[in-house]
Image (cartoon, rainbow, N blue to C red; front, side, top):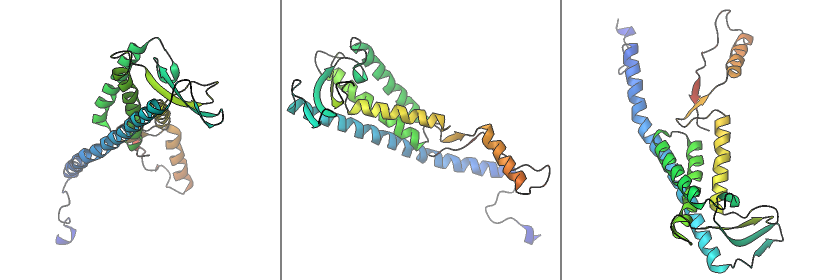
Length: 228
């Protein structure tokens, strides 16, 4: 009897094992979420600081009628005031975009409560930092509160494309990363969706490797570890 006794600390029943697993998950979920939220906040703070600093330098040293040609006509630093959204879209709806920016910030803050993915933390941090950068201009710059013009200064072939700033770039990069994560099946909670083709492929591999007839490969969950 002693030879078959469980090792110290080993659960004596499946229910005990499930309880221990749940307790372990509860212990680790809090710190994991804290780390992801820290990544989100760090990325957002970096984007916001870089955007504020570069705009201050540009406003202090450039004039709207004197662009600086960094790389011929391909890359220019050109001070402009934009009453619209990113890339000069919707120039007559400044207040509307101010409200939208507030909404984005509130949504990301609420979403952070269920965030366990580093990839999503970076994407949301880029979006949050960019939204806050341009929102600061709308609040504090002329012509008035919530109607301020955003400072744009980066011109990539400005003859054909609108001038933008670092906040705009962060928003675009965050949007692209969001699409990539969604297409690859990564979720905010750290899990990842697996399509049926992947499950069938696992079963085919099991059959080809000599698995006994009638015995399938290990069951594939609909979700799995989602850390990029």
